[in-house]
Length: 111
Length: 113
Image (cartoon, rainbow over all chains, first blue to last red; front, side):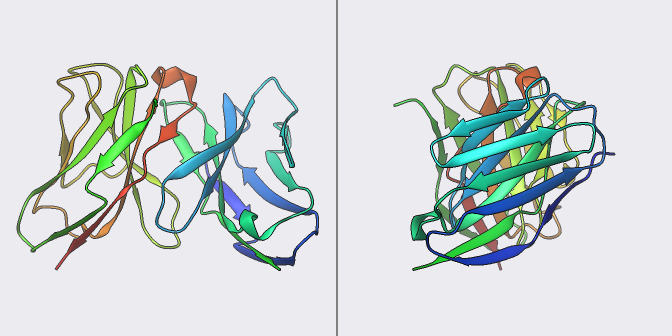
């Protein structure tokens, strides 16, 4: 059964710092990997989707990479801002038409 | 604007009562999903539907029921058989089940006392 782990569970950084969030998964037979952002009490907002044939995707200050063979993905956030404070979730699309989610990393960017 | 709407945002019920959560999408997506989110846990799949009049159990379907009579709508009923119904419920949709790119609604927080 696919398992997704996100480390660390929480991260606090000063404004302006570049940072990396980590996601690992146990079964490399995936279709894609999606990074989401969730603000407190809100739904999930999709940030980046990486298909299994791709190595990375970029959107603005965000860059996500995927290494299927090692079962890892990273989300890189450049020049962090207080507005980036949220919980970041990664989800893996694999068999059985399901997404398997990690528990998230709660990011706090301190002004 | 295309998107997914969930209503209400907050819902309060007494123990022993059934309650139905609404989910509507205007994205013309075939597939729809219901997830449950508890503090400190990842999202867990309750039910999903590939097409109208079809739905499949997810990992935690016990105590829940769904229907899919229209493409746009996928209501979730939390029955009195669900032992711990208090949670944040999220609805999602995707173009098809095999696209794995899901879009989420704003969620409904259900509190049962």
